[in-house]
Length: 299
Ligand SMILES: [Mg+2]
Image (cartoon, rainbow, N blue to C red; front, top):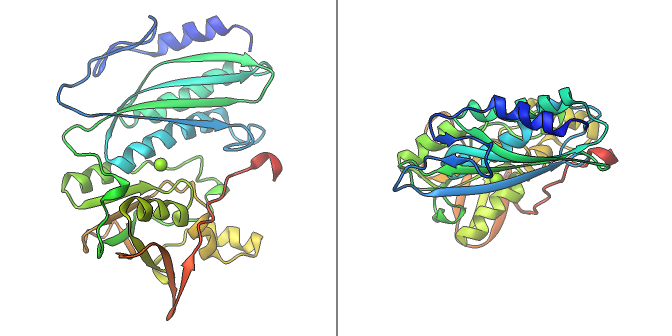
């Protein structure tokens, strides 16, 4: 993109101080007014054209929103409050200034919805495809972070919403479950959590491994998204397979006591042992992780 310095000047005009931001980007580093006595949680996430989105199809605003929301969903997974983010973007030389601005605004608006200021970053142009990263800073803000390792044998496993078929569009437009996660963790009822980015089978597997437990889940109880049913009609695979393995749903898997409320769907239980057993009718079989990487360029 021509006019990179003009782009940076424009970005600086979008940023303002206030709240946690003592001095926004413009110096070598942004300056944050970090509350004392809180834990700082840090994450980073990268999206690449052809892997996580397809720039020939998806709008720059959607792409920007996705990369920010993936980070916000990781905040939800740990019940932390997003505070600030920094971003990098490697722009193909062919894109316009307007395109770059749309990317930026997609990120910024997604963050602002959850009180997360975009406070700095770096841009560059190159002969390759679009690549973006967002690095996020979260605050514990009075709530102990929920880990993958806290599940106990006998705990109930829940999901926060229907799963599967996200590739039909939801992978670009999901709502990070920050408020629900903070509410559950604030009540002290979430023993372990993770967001469904790689698929229920793989992400629940992470909780099993980190908690040194197994899980038994009921196929009939897993909420299957209408998108999974629509996708199943195209792929010929059962919709439940899409719900179990597709990923990029960004709902949460929550593990805790029974009876946590109507907003959560109970799908099974943590047990002694290892791995995940899927119960279908009276039959139980071992569920292999098949989390699947989007590969837009090859499809
Ligand atoms: Mg995650």
